[in-house]
Image 1 (spheres, helix red, strand yellow):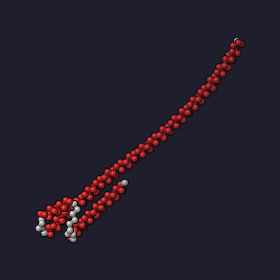
Image 2 (cartoon, rainbow, N blue to C red; image 1 turned 90 degrees about the vertical axis):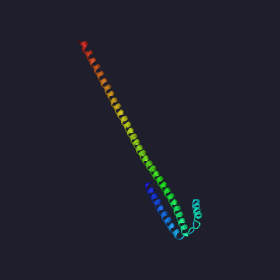
Image 3 (cartoon, rainbow, N blue to C red; image 1 turned 30 degrees about the horizontal axis):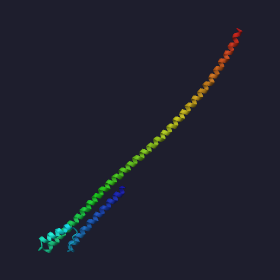
Image 4 (cartoon, rainbow, N blue to C red; image 1 turned 90 degrees about the horizontal axis):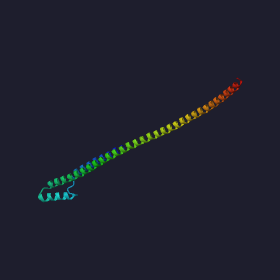
Length: 174
């Protein structure tokens, strides 16, 4: 995007330079060769009419000077409008480039946030699996302990019964 911006700016500069050269050459050629007036706007017509009515007996040199000044003014207006248009286009390009850069930054931040979320989800899943595994191990150990306790209780009860039987056997003899 920034490469496009640089290329467009360079193209605009080239157009401006070539347009300025073309108008400079055209002004020089028209002053030396062209004696006919090509008025393209009503403003130029009225200025030329005012000059013609006030200077009806003016010399041809004065008329050429007026024509040349009108052409130069017209070319300056064209050049100024082109310059302002280029300036506006550059401003718009800068704004567009800033917006594109901000969008790229936001997309990068969003991508990073999504990656972080995925990482936390994987960790959460891993922790959940680890907790489930430890709970299962704990329950298995608890079960094993209960089984051992039952065996020990049965052994104890058997021993108590055996001792009771011995005691009963030895008591009647006494």
